[in-house]
Amino acid sequence: MKEGCADLVIEGLKEAGVSIVCTLPESYLKQVFVKVSRDPEFEHVPVTNEGEGASIAAGVWLTGKRAALIMENSGLRVATESLARLGMTHGIPVVMLMSYRGDVGEEQWYGIPHGITMEPLLQTLRIPYVIVRKAEEIKRAIGNAYKTADSSKYHVAVVFSGEIVQ
Amino acid sequence: MTRYQALKVLAASLKDELCVVSLGGIQNEWFNARPAPRGASLYMMALGCHIPVALGVALALPHRQVLCLETDGSVLMNMGVLATLANRQPKNLSVFVFDNEMYECNGGMPSHTSGVLDLAGMAHGAGMPDARSVFSEGEMREAVDEALTSGRHHFIVAKIEPGTEEGLPNKLTDGIEDKYLFVRYLEESENVVVLPGLTGEAGQPERGRKR
Image 1 (cartoon, each protein chain N blue to C red):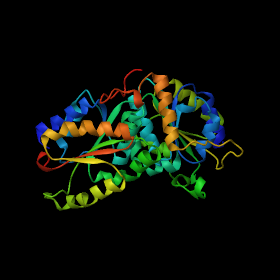
Image 2 (image 1 turned 135 degrees about the vertical axis):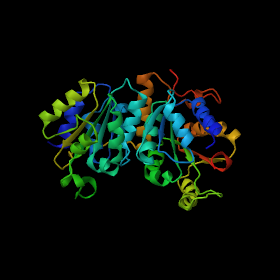
Image 3 (image 1 turned 90 degrees about the vertical axis):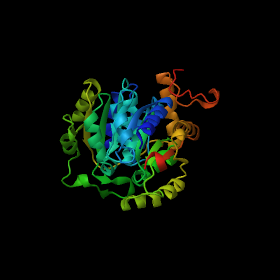
Image 4 (image 1 turned 60 degrees about the vertical axis):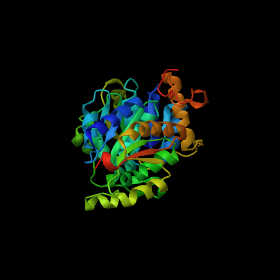
C-alpha cells in the first residue's frame, strides 16, 4: 500500500475510535502493519490466525470499545467458522480490513485463489463489504464500516484494491 | 472431581468477575453454580473462540478480572491462541480448562487429552510459567484463590471425571440473548454505553462514552 494511503487507514481507524488492532501480516498492507505496531495510540495484538483475531476483536466490541482485524483476504477462509459463530450465533460484530489479493491485475499466481473465493464467501456469510480503490475513499469506508457494524450487530469488511495497494 | 464440583468451587469465590463460558454440559452447570450476577457470564457456542474472546474483553477492560471457562475440545480447536496468550499474559485474565478428555455431549468420543497430550504442559511450554493441572477440589480451591489474588495471569487445567450433573434447571436463553445480557451487565457495572440504542444522536456514535 502506498505510504500516504496507509496514513489514511491509520487516520480512519483513529477517527472511528479504534483502540485495539489485531493483525496477521500480509504484503499488500505491510505499511499499515508497521504503522499500527509503532503507534502508541493502538494496542497492537498480533495473532496466529484470522479466526483468533476475529474472536479477540469481538471480545473488545462487547465492552463498548472498538477493534479492527487487519488481514489478507485469504484469511477470510480461515476465519469463516469463527465469524459464523460470532456473528450469526451471537450477534457480535467484527470489522475487517483486508487486501484484495487476486483482483484483476494480480501478478502472482498464488494470489489468484484468494480473489476467486473472497466475494462469494463474503456473500455466503452475508457480510456487507466495500471495495476501496481510491485514496479519497479510504477514511469514509472505514468510518461507515463501524457505523454499519454497530447498527447491524454484524460483521463488515473493507477491502483494499487497485492503485492504492498494487 | 466432577465438573460441577469444580465449578462450584470456582463460583464460591467470585464476586463481579466476568466469565466467558465454553459450550457443552459446562453451560448449564455454570448457570446453576453461579446464577448471579447473571449477566457477568457470557455463554458462548463457538468452539475455539472462547479464549480469544475473553482475551479481547480483558485487553479492553484492564481494570476488570476476566475468567475464561474453557473445555478441552474447544482449546484443541485453536491451539494458536496459547501463543498469543503466552506473549501477553494479561494480569486480569485467567483461563480454566475443564478437561474431561472427551467430546462428551455428542457421544463421548475421546479427545487428544485422553492420550499423552498435557494441556498444562503445552501452556507452560508456550511461556506461561504458572500453568498447571489440578485433580481435586482442594487443588482447585488453591488454584482459584491464587488466580484471583496473585495479580498474575493463570492457566489452570482442571482434570475432571466424565458426566454431567443431572436434575438442574435449564438455561433457556439463546446466544443472542446471552450476548445482550452480558452487554447490559457491562453497561451497568462499567457505567459505559455499549449499545447506544434509539437515544443516540443521529450520526454521532456514543459507544464507549460514560453514561
